[in-house]
Image 1 (spheres, rainbow, N blue to C red):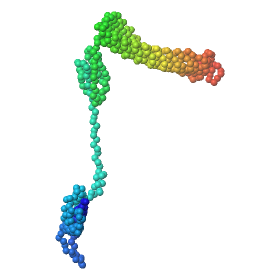
Image 2 (cartoon, rainbow, N blue to C red):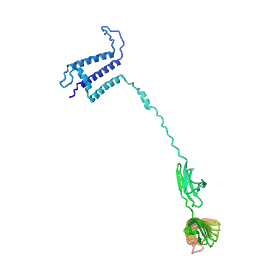
Image 3 (cartoon, one colour):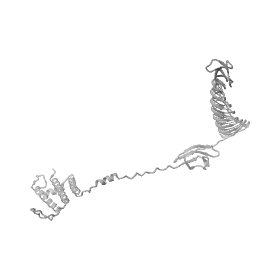
Length: 459
């Protein structure tokens, strides 16, 4: 059985220390009372020369002696190892570690209370706190964003030595090269004699590091002379010389012109451009012996796609071609000043368009097979104007013909002439009605009396 009396003694001792420490602090904090003359009837007590600390020590000793006397009067039971106060005090050394730890905590608490009471923290003025809270804070420092480099790096290397690298036409020598270039688009060409030229377009952004690994293929030399393929080579780059005088320089594949090449025929016709399986195919230029030339797209040896044909006489056709003929939107400009802009079909004006003739006559409207068709407006060089329907290039259907002098004919036309009922207006503004079946007979407006028709151009 554990004896708890030593622990009780320690707790009592700690409590006394707390009371003593508090009393000492209280006595120290009391302001001294100034000496004053004793009033009548009052007897001045004898002054004590002891300090407050000495008084506290005396009181503590008195309390301890009293506590010891009380412990002396206490008689422990037979199972307690000691019977005297000294034995109980010495028994503190026999406390368990947990009990000793509890004792240490109580002593530390007593010292902390005494220390806290003796050190009163200075008060902070409320105004200072408010000023600290409302004081302007320094502006945050804005870190500048790192500026991107204005250039990029282009690293180029190929599978052969002593090649030539050109970037946008500028020679950079042999690869490998590491070129620092401003941001932009660049055409890169890597070439070497005996090898097929390599080319590509590169978009280089600021800060980019691009790497191009180029493979150049060796050129196989093809030669066709007098009907014989030299060394049996039929694919590669080389030349062709026919017995009829035809000459070709360029790419071959299985004995056919294929790739890029230039052809010269015996009559002087020349073609330079792209080929596919022996036929003109892709972009190219054809110059005929008669002086005509075409530049644009080809397919299966014919003009197909966008292109421009310039005839020997100076006429120019530009537009979309199908199997050698203009089909679709295009323009025609003649050497004599004729200009047409609009639709074409089989090389003829077709669809909507506008035509201006050399004398200034201008038509705008529908076309069919090269002639005015449908609704349109024709203005002659002398100022006469017809607005209405056309058929096979002539006034046909509802329309109005206005003369330069202000007179006009409005009604139905047939193959270029008024037909049936018509309304005539003179230059002076008089209005008549007439019929093509009654030549020379007119009727004034809102009148049934016949009268002779006034002279009127076109009637």
